Image (cartoon, rainbow, N blue to C red; front, side):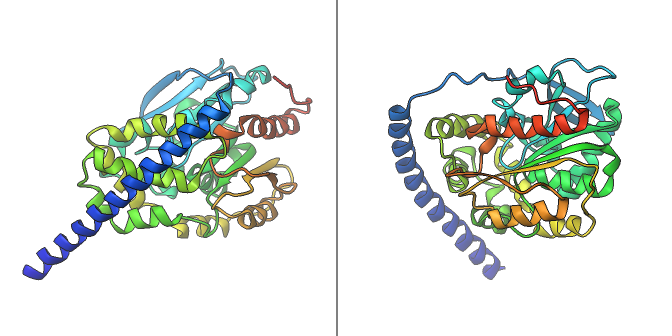
Length: 335
């Protein structure tokens, strides 16, 4: 009993020290980023409004954003975010696809974003998310779509493609988890300490959370500042730390390694892969993924890091337009 209490106290002490160090590092980083953002200014990139929808599917309240009208003749684009993001990740990409006429749906993974509470006490691994996505597609009457995935969302789409290839008219992967290129060191640390993170108040979690975002990184300072505030909001709620710990518990490279064994090149499936040159998820893994899926190489963005749907939405949107053009036989429509 005493040894157990001692270990718990020691763990809490290490976590408190970790939090203090992270806080000072985060404060210094925020100051540098603010100054950099002021120097670089802001842009007038169109931003999609948060047109949120939700539906109860097999007892799970599933949330998504939807832009554009659905009709039988329009192939939808379904976008899936990663960790620690939510459908707002695609806010700069969505407007650039308006002229394609395709309905654009940004799906929220169960247990992420504003659906954190739905994931508590429920499996939210990559295979589980693929099954939730499949159930939602069925409930929405979406038989086929062009799918776009970032980070863990890309892993979910690899699992869905392995299980339900008939759903895919096309695929775009952006800075995706794949094989064993993940989790990144910060998330491994959270995973190892998930029982302690679960008990943190949101204010203590905040610097640790932002340290993880910083490590993955933005190459656009202004976007980084905006994104950090936007992504933090769902985690600032009382259940935020428990949700973050729960997400970390289910990050397993074994899931993407297993999905890869069931994937193969399908000549009829147009695939594009977009990657940041400086993404901690290595470009080597992107090239390996391209070979496995039969993509025409990797679109490497010079100097870019991880959050490219935010930093380089024009490049991501262009990759999606290329896939749509391959599917429909029409040239891509530029904004």
